[in-house]
Image (tube, helix red, strand yellow):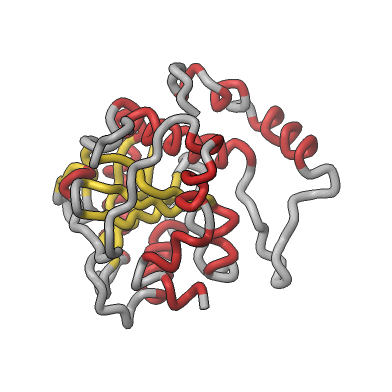
Length: 241
């Protein structure tokens, strides 16, 4: 998880060609990608998963043992999909610790392949899911491949969005997050700019220690990488019951 290569030089480039991605999918799921009972796919294409994992890796690289700032939990797509029974499909759920504060950030990784109306519809679903929640802000972070794409999607979402509930929507280009995910700048559809470390916190009780490289090999670190994270987030916990 703590490799030194950038995403552009890593496995994402190796699978950038659509045919290679399909070939990798066949190696992982020879009988086809699994699905829920309603026919919704359980997982995104391999190329999409790799792009999301690159963001996870960037957060891990930014952490340090003993630090009070960094990624405290990361729940992957499969667990998030089960939580919402396919109605919401976050690519990941991240908890970011900043001192005594914890930021709740749903991740949507955009690779520029979705039609214009898809992301506004996703935003609408997030707002509907949490419309009755009185908890502090929950952030929806849409990670895109360029500043130009962020601006275009921001305009599209802004025209269709009707802000309500605790959901706050942000867009950020991948290159800024890759170099420094804690200080990268996010932009709202309305044009507001904020760094990751300045996002409004969410009440989660006692802050968790940040994850660090090689956390997957440490039993104590696994608690921040599965469904147990949901119970620590008041606005999300009801979906887990």
